[in-house]
Length: 262
Image 1 (cartoon, rainbow, N blue to C red):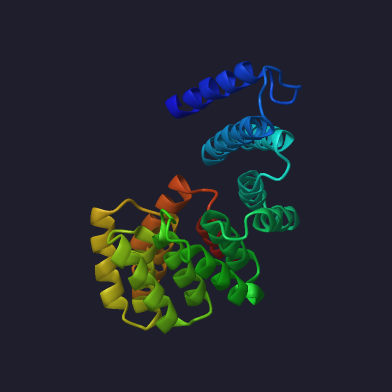
Image 2 (image 1 turned 45 degrees about the vertical axis):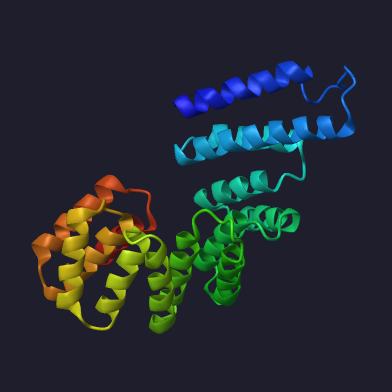
């Protein structure tokens, strides 16, 4: 909340100083100074949109993206956030349009490439090669702050098409950057499970859960492991935790579909 309030304060200062960015600015500003103020307004509205998105306040997030694009219609990060919002709302066609716009304005931006790659991986299995390509583009940026995300995402996508060797390589790269990165750790455990090393996977996942925060992926994997060993009580317990803590996740949806089939 403090972060949102601070951005509101900064936005107010920008607008007051400029006399509202969408009005003619007086006082001898150069075209470059005017352009900088417009970009600053777009940036602040986009950061607010991202904050509201992560808080689950989609309506307000969309309003902030609209304000960002009013200030600068070619602002790539705003289209990126809108793509994430569309994806969350299962508006895949519109998400595709917005991610593509973001890429067209900033083709080498690592965050945009990572997010578009993840969208393709999640929603279009037939475009997995393209998704991996976007992760690789993200990783080419030496200033990318979180390369472990793209490595782990690439591993998860390769695992979806049963390319376990490639997936393991990507997960190891992610863990070499951040040794406790949950998506990569869970991915490595899933490889053990897929390889039939169920006892090893169960032991590693138990250790993971003792030292790391639970995720939808870890709980869903726990459900599958306990089902494989025939421990119905533990399976039901993990199902309950998944539905309680992550009710909107795709893993929770999978649990509910499972129950309907039983």
